[in-house]
Each structure stands twice: as C-alpha cells, then as structure tokens.
Image (cartoon, rainbow, N blue to C red; front, top):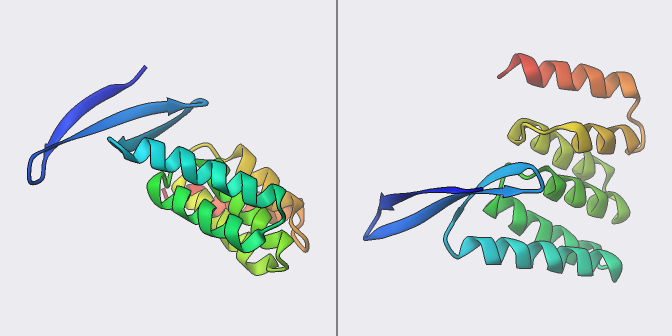
Length: 131
C-alpha cells in the first residue's frame, strides 16, 4: 500500500511512497516508470554482456531511487564483470550507506574478490556506528 502527499514547486507535484518487493521508495509521479525502464535496460545490458551500458542504467536507477539495494548490487556486478573491482566495492559501500535493507549488499560484498567475510562484518559495524 502506498501513501501520497503534495509538494508545491511551481504547482503541486505528487510524491508517492511505494512498496517495491518489501523496500520503501519515494518516487515523483512519472519517475516510477523511468526507474522501472532503467532497471529493465540494465538487466538487458547484463544479459548482452554490455557492462558499460549496464553500469549506466543501474546508475540511473540509483539516481531515481537511492534506497533500493538491488540497483547497487547490479551496479557492483556490472563493474566486477567489466574488470573494475574497486568500483564494484565502491558501489556496494555506497549502497550500504544509502539503504536500510543491507542483506543483499553484504552478500555481494562477501562475493567480491579480495574481500573476506570479516571485512564485511567490520564495514557493516562501522556503517551502523555512523547512523
């Protein structure tokens, strides 16, 4: 179920809180379709092994809904496939800072090269202390 409120900015803009697979996200009316399209394009690019295209589309999805963890996981996977392990880790770290549901992000971090499980636990603890 979603709730909505109006915001005045050159006229009323409808803001809706949406439930997406258990994740709350706010979207300005019209951005929901754009976010969905960005996610679909990202997944198509992943299937086509177009890592740069996937990275661009996941980044767009993150810009539209920064609290949705799967976009960061997808961005991380695209970066890793493209041979950018540092960027893959940074994507997950950004997601851990932005998202309250961290399970998928922690799993992705654990699966990245050169990262041990203890590193994941330490990073998660450090993130929790900054909240």
